Length: 123
Image (cartoon, rainbow, N blue to C red; front, side, top):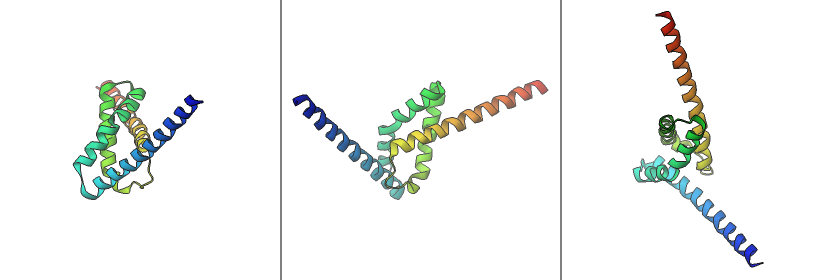
């Protein structure tokens, strides 16, 4: 019985921490959007860069490309910070944006390789 109680308490604490973290994330996004606060943006990057990088690496399987995608995602965040709703769940938004950036980057890369292949055949 004691173990169940401990598990329940840990669950409640974890849920409260996640809610606090999500609210804190959106406060940082709002602060960056309103005042171009570099410390707020640095905190967001430090907090979520691992998530974005690992999601990108898992799909593209190239460390250099995953790093480029990570930079792209945070550039998009910087541009769209003012348009994000206060109820946005930032880790979810970042993951979705990472997937979008991956698909764009892979599509651009494959069209470039097709272009170079066609050019090489012409010459």
